[in-house]
Structures are given as C-alpha cells and as structure tokens.
Length: 88
Image (tube, rainbow, N blue to C red; front, top):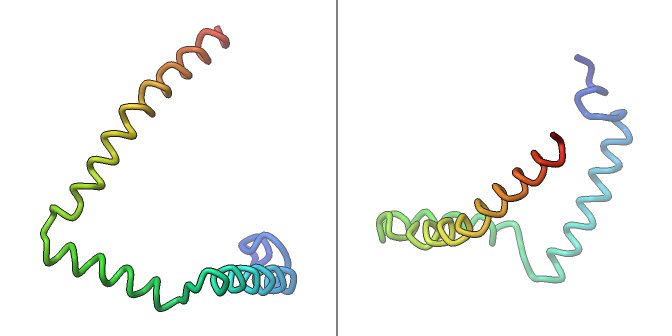
C-alpha cells in the first residue's frame, strides 16, 4: 500500500489541506474561546465526576438513549417497511 493511497492524495496536497483546515478550526475555536486544554480538562472532569459519583453520572445518558430510541426506532422501522414495499 503506497503512502498516496493511504492519504488519499499526494503528501504535499494533504499537508496543505491539513494546514488550511487547522487554521480554520483554530479561528473558530478562538472565536468561541475554546482552547485545547479546555477539551482535555472536560474529559478529565468527566472521568472524575464519574469516579466520584459512581455510575449515576451515566444515568442521564441512559435517559437520553431511551427517549431518542422511542422516536428513532419506530421511524426506522416504518422507513424500512416503506423501502421494502417500494423495492418489491
């Protein structure tokens, strides 16, 4: 497997694309006052909260999962049934 096929383009073009995207993302993060260490601290705080509060910290996630599934699963089934009827 060659480097170009792994990167999807030549090395130079890939580097240029990454530089441009990095600058744009950096500008957006600066506008919203988000810094890389804020992201690290957010992950750290989540892990500490999980450790200190136990698995109850994930309870809200489970609630969101159940609420979303109550909408998503029936819609998915209906769409699959409609696709199945259309394809038959």
